[in-house]
Image (cartoon, rainbow, N blue to C red; front, side, top):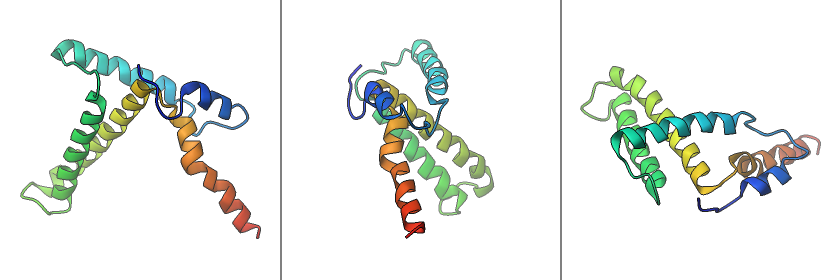
Length: 128
């Protein structure tokens, strides 16, 4: 497994004194990985290298197709596409989680560093 970005060890150090944004993320990703591993075994799919990134891109494309249908901007039935949008969002999210695991990225630390740092800025602004 290649390690890039914020590693699990770095993330653990940063999160020592703060609540994790998604405390059950590792256990949830374990469940997704088991499902993905089965998929690879059953269908003989090589999921190495850039497979996760390519799957994220594929799922974003499917989400885009479903969204275009839902918003009546394609030939597909908008009512049927409502459920498809939700399912494709789930696919995108799960593939991103699996990609992060494969790349050794601690998403809790990354979310804290990229998004939740702004909570302190907003609190400071509110008290200014």
